Image 1 (cartoon, one colour):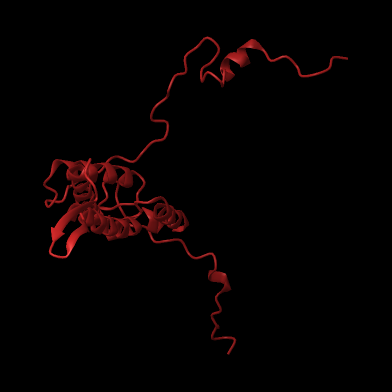
Image 2 (spheres, rainbow, N blue to C red):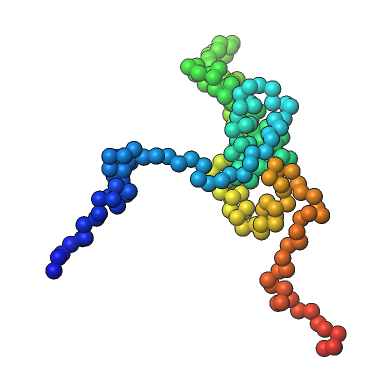
Length: 195
């Protein structure tokens, strides 16, 4: 009677590959793209107040990702645009402070004084605004988790069926009525005969 594991056929070994080398035996790993179909990208209308190239780039990165997840809608573009503007301003302050101290020293009649650099104060003020917007728009992990959890708990009719694939609202006559509630039989409605 043989003991131990059964030998694995060479074909199966080749299909399983070598986990330590991230390839099959003697083969290179092939990457298959676009396995999960994403909804068609909607046209992105960048708000007109985003005039700098970096602002526009930051806005596009966030919106393209959030449109695919169905978190952002066209009416939200101005809020995401404000966040992109504040992020651009924060990066500008950081670039100007690169290699400098966050404080400076100056002489007064009372002696030497130390103050925070104005750019550093601006950076901190902008960061407060960024954090507030991130919490509201789902741009940090905890807020994003709450939004996505809320979307999964929402009925399909509210989650995405009232919007077409380009993010625009559907015509109200074409939206199907939601199904009757499964709790409908638990609701007490007295009949006229029972009275």
